[in-house]
Image 1 (cartoon, one colour):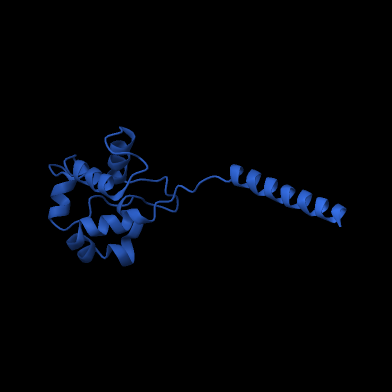
Image 2 (cartoon, helix red, strand yellow; image 1 turned 90 degrees about the vertical axis):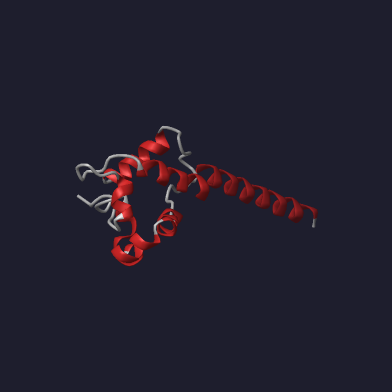
Length: 128
């Protein structure tokens, strides 16, 4: 009986060690699925008019199949986060502050800021 308990303990310790090592090597995902929902909440009129939730989705800031591809608005947001003006791994409050900061920046449309476009009910940038 004593020998069986020793084997059982060894197996449990081995499994625990494997689980620990597996947990240490797993990379955390960088997806931020709550950002589109927060954007829609910040600009509900634009979201409704442009069908952001149904059609545009992540293409408010991105284009193409890779989320590394950012349009002008997405690049401005990334810059705001990279400049530490808004933390990269952020909460809702900081994300919304980043959106407000980026509204002041010039868009690709001559003479208009991202905020001007949003106030007019347009998307801040077009996908390439």
